[in-house]
Image (cartoon, rainbow, N blue to C red):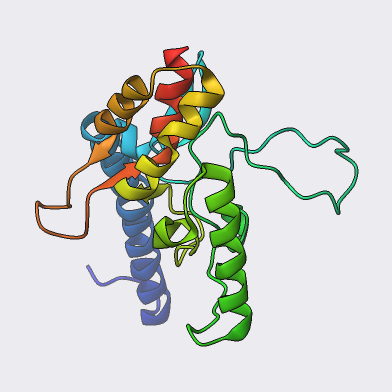
Length: 209
């Protein structure tokens, strides 16, 4: 029996039915399926790789953070932050490890401002860790492209061991053991260099005493 509806109306109804079907499939079924698989198989990663300390969320192992002493004058915007000697320090960040300000300085290697900044950082890190300026690793004075990298080199971690142990009254050998436990190998066995996740390392350090 031929339809009494005009062809234009029938076409619109067919399009509406297709829209509803695809909305259910791609807007409801597919997201629920992907979320279910992610939670079942990769729950830690799907929830942001969060790390906890004393039952509280302390950050994410994917995002670096600062470890500074409390400011003497919290309301003074001109007071510079002072790194806490009890913790391993991350590499510099152009955005202060603010996830909303991810990015690099965009200064080239020959930019005089960058050269000056690196020289100042080198002197500050050397004085803070009690080493010679020429022994300061490159990642201790240069920011990552994202400004959120939580990883440092083994060399930079090793440089900080004595300072952290002294500030906490710990045996340097015990602190070195924590560094080894939190050292990750190359990705896929050959990509990049071994690295230390500062967030995980400092949580392990906080739990050691």
